[in-house]
Amino acid sequence: MSATSASPASDSSATKSAGATRKRKRLASGYQVLLIVISSLIMAGLLFVMIRTFGYVEGTEFAPKHFQTRRFSFYEIPLVHWQITPIHRVSTTPETARYLTQSKILTMPNSIPGRWDLVEIRHGIQEIEPRDPALLVDHLRLMVDGKPTWKQWSKKNPKLAKQFWPTIDKLADRELYILIPRLMELTRDVEDVATLKTTVADYLAEEYVSLIRDMRDAERHELADDLLAEALEESPDNPELQSLKKDRPTVDPAGQT
Image (cartoon, rainbow, N blue to C red; front, side):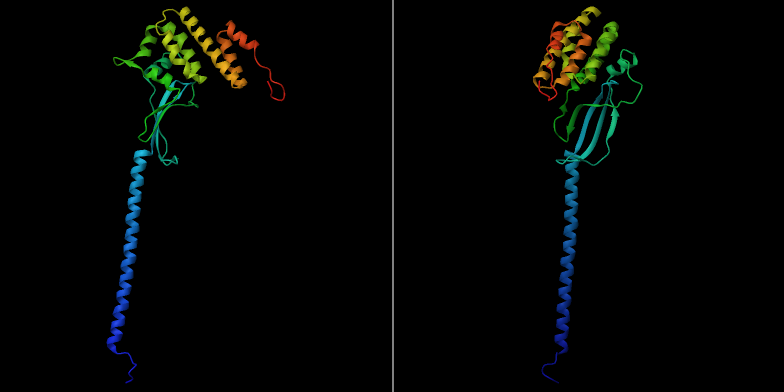
């Protein structure tokens, strides 16, 4: 036999070595797959916890034309704010608001609300963020000794309520929530309709004058004109409003005042 011929022992050793190599490769491949699976599970778990903790969004909306409130909630991906679940809504209309509509102090449209103003919102563990409509909704929610304050006031003063609440409703519809708290404070202890009308007219005229001037200073003349027209409907003889009407800047075709 030639000296260069491979012996059976050497063939067996090479076979074992190749088998061991394949085994090590399979083990390495298996570890890689396992590592990928574990990493994916960890990432999925972290994402789930992050979404549950920081991605939960909840808040309240108010429909000014219907005097209704509702809660909403959904989940989103934090930071990018991508909504990932449907919005869940639940009616939360305060007892005072229900009383005002059921007793016909406020006459509401017989339709589904089409406009909802954001009252407050919370993202994850952040503090709740109130918006302007909260200035009204907080009063509608107000309770003293377990009783709704403004419902009790309205039942005690039905004539005043019929005069007062439509004005509040009108301000809400115009998104002038900022004027409501002070107006409610001024009229809360009024005892007759005549005084109520005068108090409301004087306060709103004063606030409208300020708003109209601010709008004109900001060159938002169209909005200022709308506010002036609304103010004159309620206080047509107010001298300051009449003065603003006369002082209305004219606009030439080129848009220059």
